[in-house]
Length: 335
Image (spheres, rainbow, N blue to C red):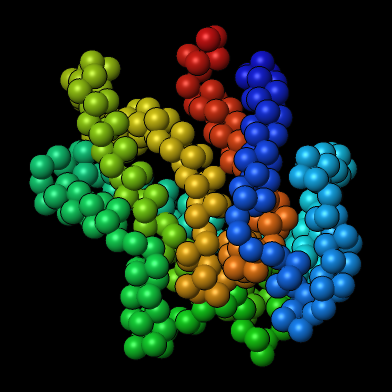
């Protein structure tokens, strides 16, 4: 287990280094002038040149990249041209909102997808199985932005049950920031009213984001469970008279869930980088919306910073999943 952890940590360095090189090159090749946009249409050429020198954009690209790497080793992700704020501070401010959304979406996907996949496999080619397969196909075929708009029209505008967007009511005072996760901070403060408000705002974007991973988990659980149900030890358990519920939840579920854990870890990274559309639709103040605004203004340092943080968390999440898989499957520890 320790060897696996060290191998993954060593591989993390070239992955992040390659990501910085790729993003830095793309940002420099794109047309446009972020300094000109930041200075404004009425800025003089002298003012634009002064800003360019202030942000070091007048130097060769390789010098800019080298300085960026040196600063990166100290935790400095640069300064945003548009906001004039350190990118690291902006990401630290926006990241908890995205983490809260992604974690909520994954919890919903796992809680609903795992039992539905198990149920579909146990009742193969019956009504439940047909329903879950149709649902999974429809979920994978529906674009997130379209689903988000439908949910807004249905539950926010027509039924007036949930908020249209945002993370917390503007007229309400949020709980004191401890973790940055509003639901967790509300629980820490024992502010139940704020907790309910945070959950209501979280509901629609989390449901929108969880549909695709839920459909994938259902399909994987179904196929894994069908395969395990045909193995000898399961048939032996049935022959010894064990109850079907005990066999399914004690023996089959554990084995089938092991194969699904890898996809859950991958989806954590994918959702971190794929929240842009959902956060834009629901005006959710996370790193996806932050990166979108940076792309529109051609402010490339925030985009690189967000990509690095997402890449780092993607690798870390996969390391955690691998370690959990070793705990679930002892046979893998000796390999």
